[in-house]
Image (cartoon, helix red, strand yellow):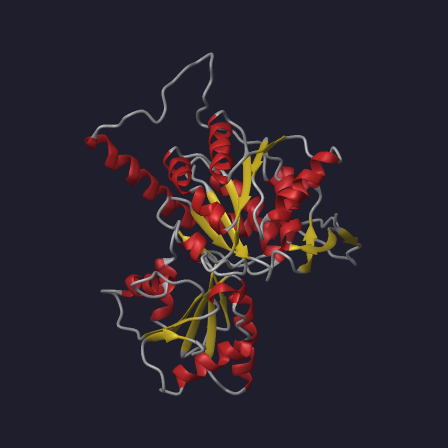
Length: 402
């Protein structure tokens, strides 16, 4: 399934065993990461552009390389329901979806988070129809931002692999106990082959031991879970979720650094800063647009423009403190691949809300790339240069025809 290449002298961690390098698509890399995390249960329903994730896991099952239970369900609602039941019984679980499949899961996303079940799910970002569109934007996952799930947005296949395994360590941590959604761009990453460094299974096992659930549904020791809760008892349940999200802000950097020390790859903490040290302007973007933005930043730097990039890796919990720190250094340019209809780009809104009452830094916003419309480094450069030239105020759409 994967094209394996020998890594030439790449050592990682202390003592440094060599890691193999493979070249494959983001989806097949996600399937490999899921397998190496050793979930007890995978439940999924195929949907473009996620399909080859679950096909990849099915191939592992066929070859006898996956020891867990693989459940072929009839819908995405059932896929999440199966993961909820399995996780409640103490199992490590995995699923994957996209777009309308994620929307069909919506009810059960709330259930998984409120039940404090550490499910890990890949969402391959795809635009919502009609009109029917199978290409990338982030409206599908951004629409789930209030469910209580932690959300990561990846910019490379290496980051997909690393983040899926790290997400289990985060979700299952005693102080977190929340589900995690790992998001990446449909086709841009899901179907693009890139090199990825892969540790040995034993090293993954050392990093990610078996799940030790705090409680399980056990027929020999019956309990009632998720029953009716009175009004005075409900707010503390919600507050506990909020507190766990805030604790995740501290734990995510710890897990990222442990992974870097063990395996040598690192993608930032809640955000990834790039050439921000002396910047007068800082561009904020997410997912694959973040990777393309680096090319634009380098190009503008060559022309003497003082601009940096802050790629948002974690959208929930939102990195308010990092955003505030950036705003004390420079003016902010926000690039959204999503929109809250009737308002504006969602990242743009979140950034402004983080700054309100703290600093008066100017924030500029663009919406671009909805429905998979290509956004190149030249487009990003044009947006940024328009702001830096003083010819742009506030917020708007980029490159809308007609």
